[in-house]
Image 1 (tube, helix red, strand yellow):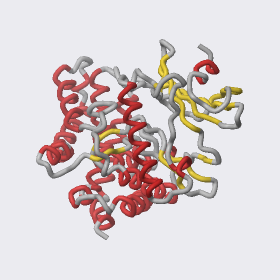
Image 2 (cartoon, rainbow, N blue to C red; image 1 turned 90 degrees about the horizontal axis):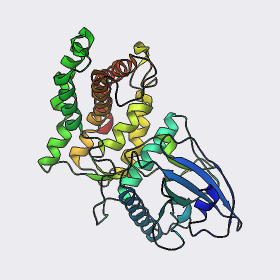
Image 3 (tube, rainbow, N blue to C red; image 1 turned 45 degrees about the horizontal axis):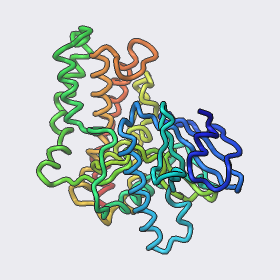
Image 4 (cartoon, helix red, strand yellow; image 1 turned 180 degrees about the vertical axis):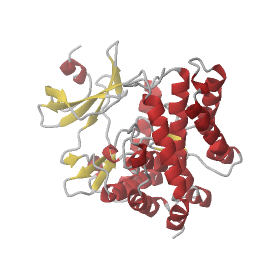
Length: 358
C-alpha cells in the first residue's frame, strides 16, 4: 500500500499532498505528511517486532497524552497543541492506529516551529532533567493503571537471572576466559545491592511511577527560542521506578564516550552533565518524590551502566545472539566500557550524595 493511501486512512484536515521521510529514529520509520488545508502530520510505522501489543501501546499513549492535555488546560496553558502530542483517529472509528495487513501505522499532528537537539551539553541536560521531571509530575495522579509495553524492561533481578542461566549453560565455553571470570566475580560483589529496587518495591517502600523509560535529549521538542515544548517518543511509556528516567539518561549522556568505545581509559562519568540534569529534575519532581526515591538517585546512576554491562556480558557468553555486533569481541568491549563507567559512577558517590542533599 502506498504511503499516501495509508495516510488517507486517518481523519486529517484536507487531502494528502506529500509524504517524505522525517528524522533518524532507530525503532520506527517516520514520515512527514502534508495536507491540502496547510496542516502537517507525522506518520509512523510502529515496530511491532519490539512492541508486540500495539493496542496496549496506543491505549497507553492516548490515555496519558489526554491526561497531560487536561492538566495543561486546567493550568491555563494557551498553547496546548504544542505542549503535548495529539494523535489522529481513523476516519471510520476511534482507533489511533491502522493495520495494512503487514505493518501498523499511527499519525499525530506535526508541531510547527519545533526543533530537536542531539548534542548533550550542560544546558540541554538541565532542560532534559526538568522536562522529564515535569512529565512524571503531571502523571502522578493518573487514576487507571497503564500496561507494560515491554515487560520487565528495566528489571535488574531478571537480568541477573539471565546472566546466571547463561553461565550455567556456557554454550560457547567463554566463561573459562580469565577476563570473563574476573567480570563475573566483580558483578557478584555488587549484584545484591543493584537488585534493591525490586526488593524495596516488594516491601512497599518504593513506588512505581509512570515513566518515559527512554530519556534522552533528542526525545524532547524545543521551541525556536530554546525553551522545551514537550516530551516525544512515548512508546516505552510504562510503570517503572523513577530510576529508569534518571539512570537511563545519565548512562549515555554522562559517559565521555560511546558505550562501545574500546578506549576504556577514556570512559568516565561526567559530573558536569549529572549536576545540571539533577538540578532540573529535582526542580520539577521534588513535589512528589519520596525520601527513598530522592536518596537513591546515585544508585540510579550506578544501576544503569551495571545493568547494561550484565546484559552485554550475558549476550557475549550466549554467543552474541541478541545485540548486533560489528566484530567478534564487540559485546566484550561493551561490557568493559560499561563496567568502567559503573566504577567511575561509584567513585563520584559522595559528590552525588552532596548534590541531592542540597
